[in-house]
Length: 179
Image 1 (cartoon, one colour):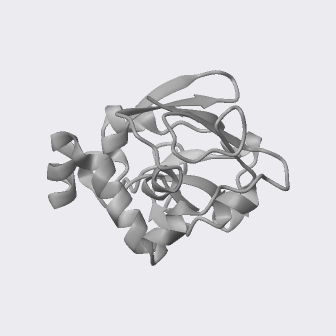
Image 2 (cartoon, rainbow, N blue to C red):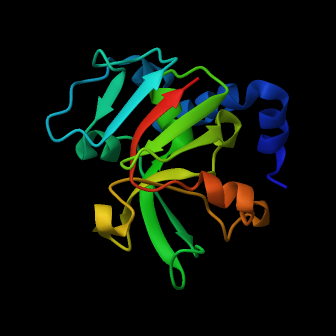
């Protein structure tokens, strides 16, 4: 299974755990309370819904530099869509939700083509999925499933090797709503 984090997530306290872990990763809870700045570059992600931090009437909007400032991590994993092990870099979903002070049970993620999936907030745990913006050191282009792709560490946790998780691995993410 997913270890102790999944037990907590399974009890409906997954977001609280994610917030706690993200606060520890950020080095201090005070950093989470800083206002969300406006993007200086092209907006590549809009997050709406139940958020405590916003920077636009639509919710929270991010350019690439803003996402890169959220303590990105790397995942080395194979996928069913690529050949061999790939290195993905991106912001953990747990960190993104914590930064936005999000409250909800589900993330409704929408791609550029309006394809939509639901990702339980309980999936947003330490060592869980990331919102990848790079693959093998190169920015993800729209042609290569970018600019953002929800990637789970499929090789690290065998439970992530399921049709349910693969279906949540949406690419060309443009919007997320926390409900």
